[in-house]
Amino acid sequence: MRVPDWPIHTETSLDYLRQVLESPQWGGFHPMVGEFEERFARYQQCAHGIAMMNGTVTLETALQAADIGCGDEVIVPSISFVSTATSVSRVGATPVFVDIEPYSFNMDPASVQQALSPKTKAMIIVHFGGPFADMDRLLAIAEARGLTVIEDAAHAHGSEWRGRRAGTLGHAASFSFQNSKVLTAGEGGMVTLNDPQYAGRIRSIANQGRLPGHSFFAHFELGSNLRISALQVAVLMAQLDQLDAQIEQRTRNAALLLDALKDVPGIHWQDVPEAVNRNCWYLVLGRVDAQALGASRDAFCQALGHEGIPVTPFYPHALFQNPLYQQIPCRVMDAPNALACVKDAFWMPHRVLLGDDATTLQIADAIQRAVARARTAHPVMA
Ligand SMILES: Cc1ncc(COP(=O)(O)O)c(C=O)c1O
Image (cartoon, rainbow, N blue to C red; front, side):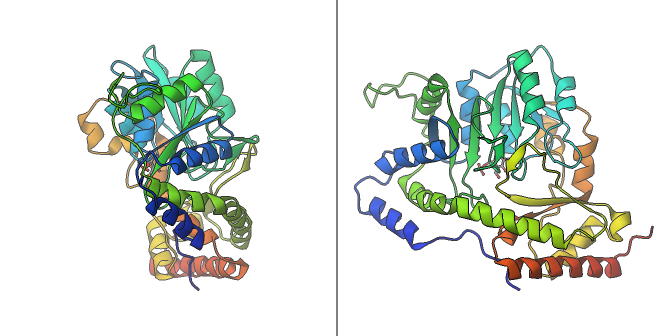
């Protein structure tokens, strides 16, 4: 059994790359960058797309362009990659960490409601692993309070909530094209959104505070050079050609894999709300009930490793437990689900879903063997 590799490239990437390499412009001003921004924005059902160096600066810029800064609070989930929180700190605002729901791994609207304060200005909603957070309830809270909503869609390219894609629900969505993501150039990011004024402000900040129609050497606000390079975009153009087919393949294989594993007791796979009519399947997430499985999460993950199945035993701590947030301002809500997931959750990367049917069934067999091996090596008594 061979788990498919990621990333994968086709000859088309070489064609796009050659176009850039044979031009005099390898940087962010190559016309292919604008073409890709338009293509990916349209893919996300948005009017505007601003590509940048990565999916961290996209979050920072989306916050800065919404005038979020000192004295403001921004609600973020306790479980995410660190950028979701550091983007808030880096614009001078205070992250307020809320709990996640137990099995969707996404922000819990009840915890968000409790976290609101007169200083709350925005929320960053992560669509963890691919499926959307509960947008009906979260958007209702945001609308009632006039909050800015930024979707951290680093995991959710092409996913849909009632037919709508990230960037059309919140005020803006931030994407990452880092190496593990379902659309990748090794590094890269983009903000997609519909509001032309907000989009113009984001573009200006990402491009040294320049404004269209003015001198290249006139700068109108404090920006930076956050531009993506055309070489990254050449790779992304080819990746985007493959994305829909890969999402379909992962969706088919996820159904096959989870069906083959349905009789394994003690693994609760990620809950996907019915309103998520399309999931890009960035991660295959689960939680281990050690008593029911007969083995601990760590023993299971170790055994998966022995079987050649790539796995990560979740984040080692909730975001607010990072040494960083012992030193800089933040506010922390009770987060029992986040803390429980740190102890019992795991994820497999999306490449486990990129094989043919036979490979997927072999992966399911390997996971079953891992359960048996974990039970023998480190049994958990009922
Ligand atoms: C949820 C989330 N947000 C933001 C980022 C940051 O993206 P990048 O690595 O492109 O800076 C990541 C990256 O893994 C992520 O998982």
